[in-house]
Amino acid sequence: MDDIKSSGVPGITMSVHDPNNGMWLGASGKADLKNNIDLSVSNITRVGSTVKTFTATTILLLHEEGKLDLDAMISDYLTDYELRGLENAEMASIRQLLNHSSGIYNYIENLQFQTASLNHLVKEWTPDELLSYARDKGAYFYPEEDVEYSNTNYILLGMIISKIENKPFYEVFEEKIFTPLGLDNTQFAARNPVPENIIRGYADLYSNLNVINVTYYSGWDYFTADGGLISNPYDLNRFFTSLLSSEIISPSSLNEMMDWVTPKEQDTDFFPIAYGLGIFRMETQWGEAYFHSGDAIGYYANMVYFPEQKTTICWAVNGNYGRIDDFTSTREAMENIFGVVLN
Image (tube, rainbow, N blue to C red; front, side):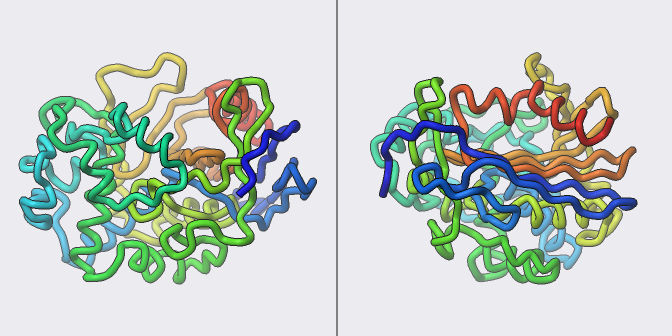
């Protein structure tokens, strides 16, 4: 493990697809700063919470197969013991988990979890260990009163998938999404938490671009459906374009996915957004766009689709936090990317 500080800036890989021009791929920067290895468009990287769209897609496929009801209570699928201490879990539906209207507390916001994870940066957490940081915490609101992003929702959805299919949820992802779409660069971290060919990840912990190698510091979501995905912008683009073209789920399921709920309060530093089932809508100067982004320690990724232009833009960077975020994940950074591609 190499956690020395490195001078320099990590890089970005990007894919753009539209029906007229097909797929464009590009990469710039370094996959490994210490060894001065350039990024390639074929490199794999951590893509964090973009997995939530895969989780939602799998749930909708199970719904199409008649194996679950979106409006059934999650308590119909998970036991009292599994849901113990999770306020609202006894009254929340699968749909409310998907669109974050359950009100269930987000375990990542627990300061005790943040301290524990910082003190054990290479620990591989079990789902129950993570859920323990949401147990006995007050709900944000009564189900459907508002929407509030919560990783806890998607841990529970992964557990439901595993329970219905009687196998790990990531095996279901492989069978229903990865293999049919030929996503050869996509895998789940539980299979191999740090693949030999994954690019190095870096964090700007002191906001001075003197980054630290944190490739091995991403272990809390290796076994839960709220994160843990490894992929690249090429595969993300194939997935997102196919999803929004009704090639994975039916048109009626896609309509369910895009049943938008608007939060009572918007983040004034970001685009106005609405919540769907494992997907978000944002309002931009180029029209509305559908998206889901994802963070892991040292990594960031985003997949965005503009329906008016029928254009999918996906990018991933192997660095985050501090000043790096200003260039990759803020509204201004995203507008710069959209402007170059769409104007």
